[in-house]
Image (cartoon, rainbow, N blue to C red; front, side, top):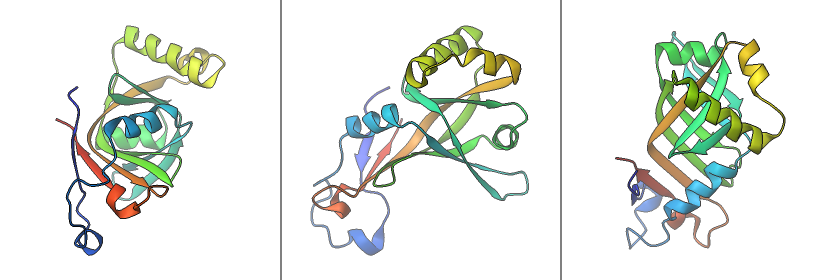
Length: 166
């Protein structure tokens, strides 16, 4: 993946006052660091009746995508089967990274085995028996658009960043 294109998000009420379009924007590695180290991730999906659904998952940032698993009968898995568009956010709202993308079920068992090994290193224990018993799916979410907000930046408004992934 090429480095995503960095810009300001659409925020007309706040960003009109900024003179320079690039001052203070966060670098892509800032977002990647938070995607890699977040323990929990919020995932928003859409129910078949168009109502939103928000839930926590464990996941990993690997090969420029967010990977997570969930049981085949969970609400989020059912939602993704109908509409794979989702939004995933890191757990810390004061240094938030929010990605919009499409969840794809991973069919390749060799990739799933690699994911389990990375999960196990990150979270401890052995995830494989849980995945096997629950008939779980592994999903890959390739980001399309990523947003960052850093409340600790010298200028919060300047630090709000949007990346477009090609």
